[in-house]
Image 1 (cartoon, rainbow, N blue to C red):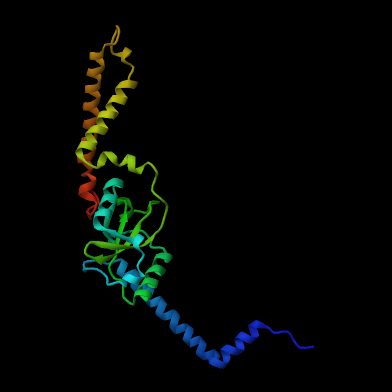
Image 2: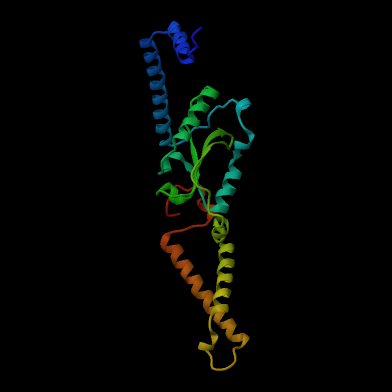
Length: 239
């Protein structure tokens, strides 16, 4: 009876004919050393400012659904009140998957990616937060290539909640509707002895509008807040 073939033993036999045990250890050690050095260099580049014209990439390898113009990114930040800044401003932790994707892109495009931008809420630039960042690399001519997205998705109502901050007109309209809602739920009987008239409702609305507007302006000035269109690429936290 012929003995059965052990695939592991045959594989080891083939490998040993090509290289010795000591050589294979040195080879693997050198490979992992190079990979670790590359990953450390990428992490260092992520923590530095991006001031260059962009990274030369092989257009035949690019995915069209990952290419975005600066106007598209600005519109996204405007709608959801996000920031688009150099990756050096990001204070969270980059997942290993993002580092791996950068390393893979460098190998595929035969280049070194050392310029990075990130889209994230202002808090994500300072504190740990559950919102999702988007990591880009500049391509030049105001185009950016999306490398990786991680974290959780934004709250489904964030677009609606951030609508008043888009412009001064939006804020006034929001204050108007809030004042109408407060007026509608106010027990007018507490302020009058007879039947409530339309004039009294209007006066209550004016009072509510003044109160809500004053509170909003006070908080806005106190915290130095600005509208979405003015802060989407601002590096200042209190903008």
